Length: 455
Image (cartoon, rainbow, N blue to C red; front, side, top):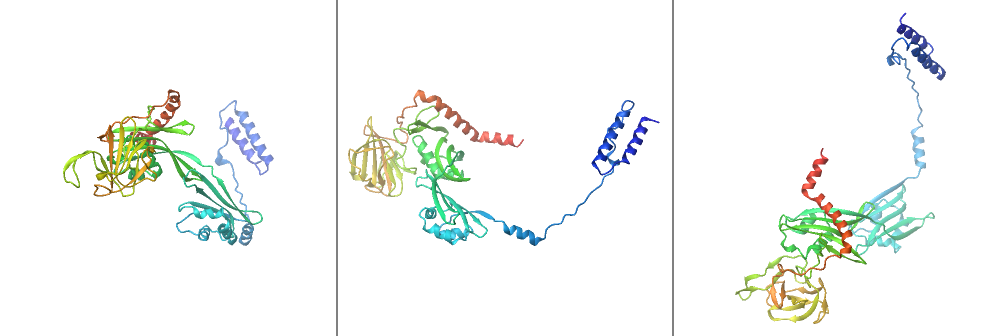
């Protein structure tokens, strides 16, 4: 008889002993192992029998479920709590807000209306979020929201919480905010603020972009196709944007020329914006005495609007609504203030090295302005009007060197000192980080990243 035939007979005999007990199974597999070993020296055989030849048995056990009534009764014994979130709407009352949040608790409503800390919740601006936790009866467990200070720099957590005895207590604590670094890019199609709106950049950041570059860029003369990148801080709590912070770096291309800047903290509360090679962006004179408006008449020959004669217009006219604040474009001393013939209400400011500036047609002067008073760059010295020889509200601005008018839009003005050599290592590290971010935001780099991501 062949060895394989012997093995098959042995397996058949083993099947007779296969049972449901653990001992029987062990015996079966042990015998099968011995059989394989016994013939292994003389022939090559399968290590295990065909699975189709091994008998199987399915065991089904019927489980009885408790009656539905018993299940519902058990669920009813358990306490349920709910967390809800709502946004404050214009005209909201405390009672209306609580009802919308699912709070049906007269004691909580009364506390919210009478406690001085809790009442501050109704000072929250529209679109702020309020979160509550209630039980299944609508009783308030806690209520939470945040409140920002007027300058937006301080954020507080307001909370009303139920105590074990059923009373309520309101707390007001300074919030710990999560700081994030945001990056955004925009293209000028019509105006800066239209571009920042399209890029979902807040007005606070847009205004900082203007302040950062206004000594180098005339924002009234932006061109279609100009573009910018910006890196700035934002502060979050519970996944919600609380406020934006400082612009950390900016890159602006205007008329084909690119300006770059980075904020550098010099310590002791001092800091400023510098170009990537360490030169300060702050210059002695601002490009405009008004904040971001359009030019109605440039430094050129023109027909005088009243006399009708051709003459040199020795300044720049800025069209603006009556009452618009007028800023001193540089540090200096008031040389004269008062009515001055065709100039109307006029202020002249003397600066260093023979520079002076004149501001005409004002509706009124800033409070306390007098001859000999010191003024700082950006300080309000008066308000737009239509006094003197003027056909409508505007500011006539002159930039003078040794009393000779020059075009303020093209005049070369001195810059502030560059960074000290001791600050350069830390400064270069910051520049490298910001420059890397700008490279990532450029269109060609974005296309490359998208191409790699699609592979």
